[in-house]
Amino acid sequence: MIGKVPLDQLAKDRNLTLEWKAFELRPEGLEIPPKSAEYLARAKAGIENLSRKYGLHMTFNNQSKHSRLALEGAKFAEEHGLGNEYHDAVFAALFQEQKNINDPKVLSELALQIGLDQDEFMQALVTRTYQQAVAQDIEEAYQLDIHSVPCFIVAGRKAFGVQSYEALEKLLQGDDPHLLRL
Image (tube, rainbow, N blue to C red; front, top):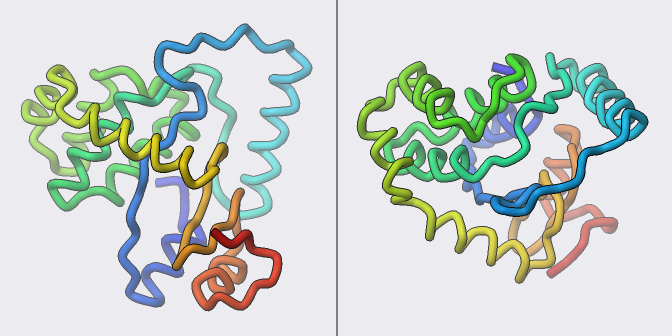
């Protein structure tokens, strides 16, 4: 696990239920041209800054270009009551272990580690059982004018980017005048 992130802590403190929605930064089938060494250095520095700021162990991963299968796997895990555990495992695989989170073998190993039936999980990936559910989430994001992650939405209010515990608490309470309103 990456560490206790503010969202996890707030959910625990307030007994909240989190609803994850799928979103692709690099949509499946869309190949992005290679990035310059300067761009990659800035991206790496950004991840390292977030890691220090929030006390999380995170490193830059240039292995995973896409995440569609990880998102479909999340729908399976959520349906089986292990959504948060799956998300934590995928984040750790991406940001700590430098794994490709669009590789079915990597994902099925993660599923097994958190207690999901590995064969059922792999079957869901192979048959693309959750492809439509992921597509619906992505369409909903675009309808809500969401073009980056993370994005937190509470009662029609949304906040973009990594948020502190206090900022998430304000979002939950609805008393931050800088939040975007839908």
